[in-house]
Image (cartoon, rainbow, N blue to C red; front, side):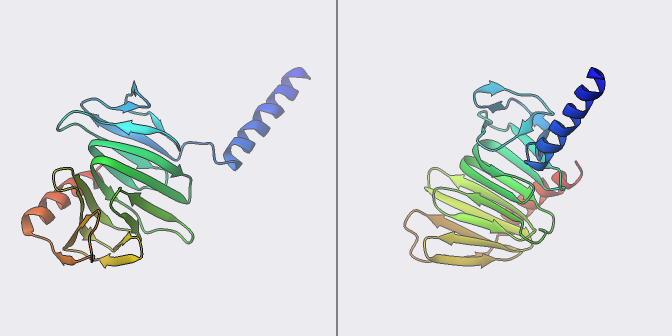
Length: 197
């Protein structure tokens, strides 16, 4: 009888945990170099959750994070704060470094946003890269596929494939331009590698 009761309690706990959204929505599937979460070094398979700070401190090092729904994100030489992460919401703050994404078409009510101190970038299912250029004090966005909406205060602009955007702290206007072949090809090569994982 105790065994049956224990089994029922375990099943109820598992159901409640799933219902509350505590099961992992994303995990690290590849590490090149060293990566840290909240100061502790981590290995492949580590789960990503709301509130975590991810650091990849060395030049050339990166990690790839895969979501349960198929989204894939690569952080290179980056510091990232996971502001929110559920089945429907992904909100990442890129503090420094680079992020490249392969985001599946979003389901109704789903959001995927990357914020920097200069602007936020909302996705509708796309492939893109964002870099924080600390010397220029700007964020750089390059879109390979789909559409990304860049927002800074009351200003916003849609960035389409083969386009890019630089955004600084006091950018008067969000000017979308055609991306150079070099920047597009470099961004696209990283994303194509993401797709194979």
